[in-house]
Image 1 (cartoon, rainbow, N blue to C red):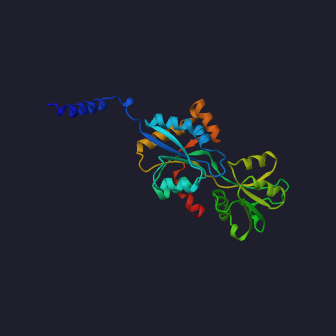
Image 2: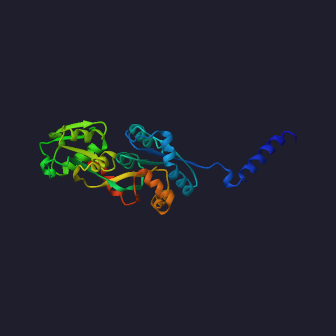
Length: 276
């Protein structure tokens, strides 16, 4: 019977391992991909610290360890969704989570409040008083492929102005747009409602000519593999962040007032509206 002893010892070990309490077994791991765009101004370490409060709450709700994954480049974010590497994605600009819904079977969870808008800005002393007067004027916009440039282009299209037929300067950083307006290089500029550039513009006493229709801002989407129960638990976490001081502090760090679950239909239509 001696040859059986190693086998019996192995079986006993396996039985003992299966009898361990759940707390002693391996905790499931989920990923939370975070992108604030190429001009977000944060690095991986900062992102992990900034979004840790959300990751911790999601982890408690889902019974898993949630790891924050910082994704700076949009191409990497989209590839990660295509490959199903990210369990949750929170991102600005909104067109990438929208791509997740349309192209990669991701599921809507929530989006931030307030909504995002294209703000068409002019100087305080500009003679322009309405969008109709923008035909034939010079525009300064974020780089042509940027979300906010597409956002402003779609808004102007709906107002009867085709940017392809206008004189437009495209700049990489939105911070350069106020400079172009103040120096008389352009008559009107397009900036995001959530950008530092528009806040500084208003603080200087300068003028916003037009605020566009709102679109979902900073959406959160979940992977196709997440269950309806997982999504509901995650949504509850986001919607309840306003209910305690720590949650409100986190929301303030993102520059938002809270999350809502009412934006799915518009997020699913966003790419069509943008024309992409």
